Image 1 (cartoon, one colour):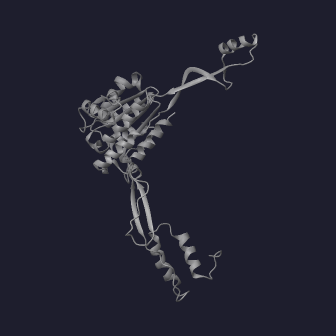
Image 2 (image 1 turned 45 degrees about the vertical axis):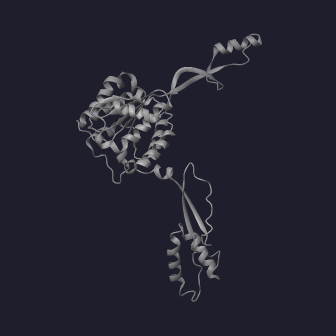
Image 3 (image 1 turned 90 degrees about the vertical axis):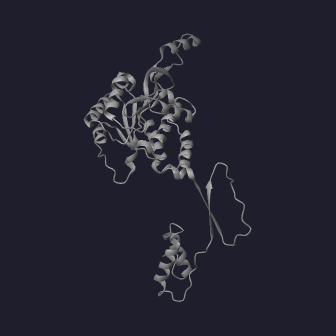
Length: 337
């Protein structure tokens, strides 16, 4: 106001409105407050009112036209076009509140998700321009072109390879609102890269890697559902993770791997068994990531016995209730080097 000056009421009004109003909804409240404050200071002055206009809300669809045809019968008032994307709305919406149409849209969005995974150093050496380790064989071979003089020297460096990714998904009754969508995430991970293993956790452990290897998402999910006989049943996290450790994990599958467990932590078994098995798993795995869809709820605390027993042996504790949280999970998996 020092810059604008107090000479014209209109200048004061527009300077204050431009700096104090953040949304169109604030303009009405601002006008009332402005007139109330300056009614005695500038008597008899009419301030400009907000012009009424028509607001058109459009939904961005793949087959929607870029520009809509104007309505010839519409009034001369200015028209404000507001467009929004259903995909952006769904990204942060909880899976438990999805409608059937939103589930179909989420399945389409998950098909575009790519899980690259972390990488680790390998013992295999590859050629490099950096002066790391001398490559004597290539150097001598190249010196044959220069009369035996090693003019061009070759070097090698350790290569890298993807770490194995192991996904354990809880398919019990308490995870029903989330399991269907998260299994889609498992399918995206299995078909996107090699060295990925997927298991279903319920009252028993079921390996579903081969079922999810089908490129057709619907066929893959249907095959996995037929194989998992205890879908939407009870859960014994401690016993199933013990079976995974004894049969697959400790023998080599989990060694140096990134292990992702998707569960709400509700366990009908002994919590001490779960804590013991998580400790065993943490000794051999590179990183252990626990995904809990309930973590995003206001006031959440890991008070479930199973969740409290497993949490001390978890490297990353993340959410898993929305598309955005699954995108963040893919970043956590990729950064787990």
